[in-house]
Length: 589
Image (cartoon, rainbow, N blue to C red; front, side):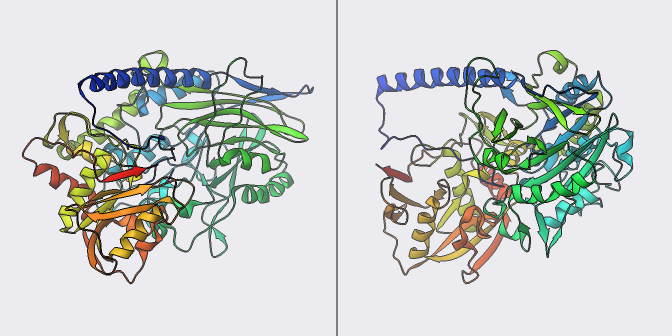
């Protein structure tokens, strides 16, 4: 997932909106209720499907070690409660930890992995404290050996995702390596950093890896290697400034390069932690019958891996995977992904031949962490104490109220690519900078604004990245080119506008989709005229592949943080907070 871009979803194929009459309103409301029920049912069905055990077994004799592996991905600092699946409470650090402890109760030799995006895009409970509470929580899952760096019997391992770069490389190193933040100290003084090894085989600078490519764990007398990698197209989903000077290698090539070294060390049980993913289609029947492989890049990567790579723990797409991906002439590779935000974990078992170190059996299931049943009924007191401490620190800020929203303001885009919340945020940014126009990226909006009291915490959860506002001087031709750039890359990235409106044609070729462009008062934009345009610093640095905005020739003025601009705008609404009706973007067939 982009640092500030959502996983791609295809827009619905409808050519236009029309204002419904009284009867059609009733039908729409009925349809929405039905759709919500259907979506809830589908979500629960997905979770049931993910929980089915997938198993591969080699009929080989010999003494075997059974190694359990628990994995999470895309946790995004979700230490507090609030997530739901099918209308049921799910997740949070105390609940997730309770599940992990219950899963490990029968075996003291369980390994726990996180597959990137442990932090970033986090709720205020973690983000306002520079995500240190989340790292503290994951540290707390470690055994006594994790207190010693490089100890192979430490039960934890992690890798790097794209969101770890949200605040730049220097802050990432501080968070992992230790040292108080300029706004700290927070809950730990001095900040000690991560007490678990972080690995990545494909992130380098000047030919040197930034983190070790792999780590070898010793469990029950056998060795298991973990090799990490981030998605190879990292540059397309994070701010270019955040990874300036870094080289990101193809995931499979980087991992395969490490395998011979591991083999020379007598290691043949290899688990790849890859922050890249896919989405698995629904299937019926037994898990050993024609299971579909996940779509997306992760299947291709898995098929290219060396035969000694037995398992791929994937991430990034916030979906689930639990499948055996076939490799011609070789044993299949087991690929898992456990949704996101601590709402599930992957529970894997590896059977390893003690004589030669080979994996001769492997199985996995994806377990949803429901808070209203099983281990979820007894959340971890240790984790809850940490959450309470974080809440005490941030409460004075996040409990401030700007007003009340009579109705929820949603970030869900219509078929043209426009959303009420996106328009509201763009207008807040336009007014904060006094510009003619403004644009904001939908991936930078991390949730809806619920009906009822609007707190700073809710606003921060929507805009958690700490971006600053930037006002640019752009010609009308530049603005048209910017809008045309929304359709470059693998999927459309439709920006939410303020101060202008335009029409685009779906059937038109890329580069010629914008068929009408004018200011909100109806005046066409002149190609040579200069206008002021506000964007966030992520976009201004060329994020989401809008490289035009990073042109140093464009005069620019820095402004406040995006969340502060939104908060000030809401505070000025006089207590009642409403969003404009989406009307700035029109789509033609």
